[in-house]
Length: 122
Image (cartoon, rainbow, N blue to C red):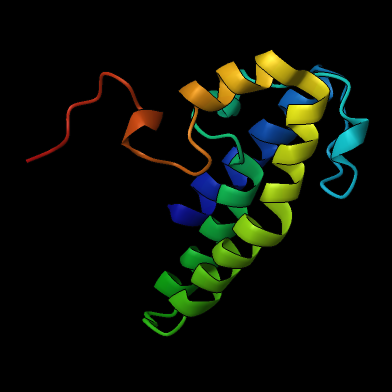
């Protein structure tokens, strides 16, 4: 289930980039031609990274390994600091006020605010 959801999220994000005819290359965020903020980008600013982490979590769950969660946590921490911060600076420079509005409404990772109107289960 986690693996399928993660791969589905990844495919949905790639389709959104392609539909907007902008780059999917995380090493060249300055080549972005449009700020993609629909589809999976309504839930998180980084659906592709969430999907990558989800694949690692799915592997740990499949192996029934608590220690298997460490690579997922490590990837999230590394990507958050080394990659996402640089991408976000590039997006802020390129898209200005549009980026500021997007950041104000969409979390970097998944969070309860990714799902407005959904009541927490008791």
